[in-house]
Amino acid sequence: MGQRPIQIRRSGRPAALLGLLLTLASATSAFAVGTPEQRRACTPDVYRLCAGEIPNVRAITECLRRQKASLSEACRAVFEQ
Image (tube, rainbow, N blue to C red; front, side, top):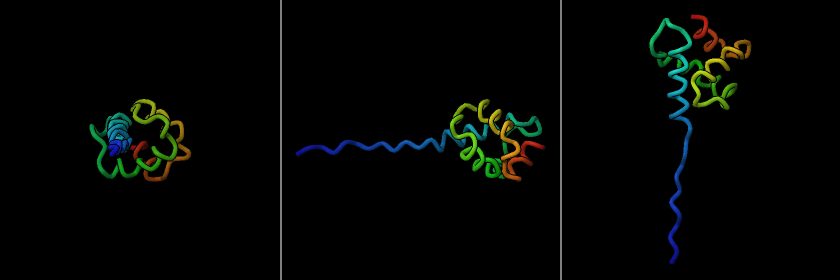
């Protein structure tokens, strides 16, 4: 009777959200930690435009700035604060 291998589900989402939190915190000095609204505004853009940079916070921030023209209105507003 063989044992079934243990399946470990890896999700980059927690690390990505932490990275996004830190990214938003470094995006502007106006706030020390991104608010839940700011994180919600930019999370889709991070996954859509900068997923390859996760979890490198600086790279995500630079990527979002480079992609400013492609950001959603909500995320663009976060970076313009």
